[in-house]
Image (tube, rainbow, N blue to C red; front, side, top):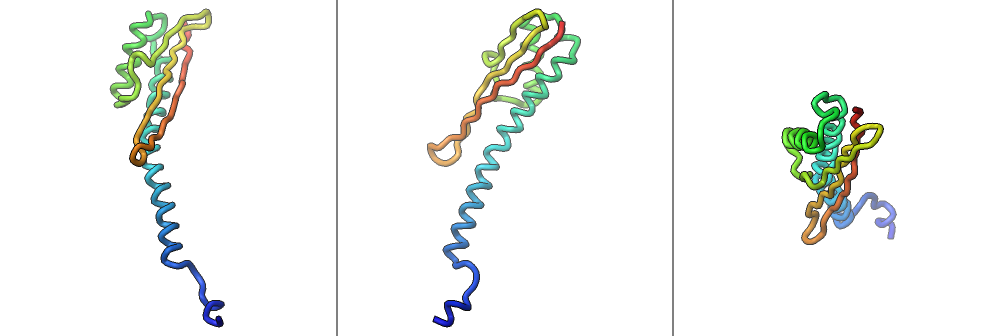
Length: 123
């Protein structure tokens, strides 16, 4: 009994659990980072349309092509032309990108992130 009071620290099984939890967190972080990076690239591509004189007052097909070129340059593969909605109003042209990214995590367990971003291009 006296030896039990002197023991301090974790057992090997305790360390295995801690390492396993940290490892799972690290794997999830590695899988999520490219998804957020892609979202950032979509946001910067959309924001660049607001200052581009080629996009102001142009038809929807021209704006869609400009955005798809920017996404291609940034190597964003998750967004297709069908995910882009362009509408006109009195304030200007609203460009909206609504898409989902699905990546496998473990076996048949997937990570799903849905994004909806929009910008207003003044006329």
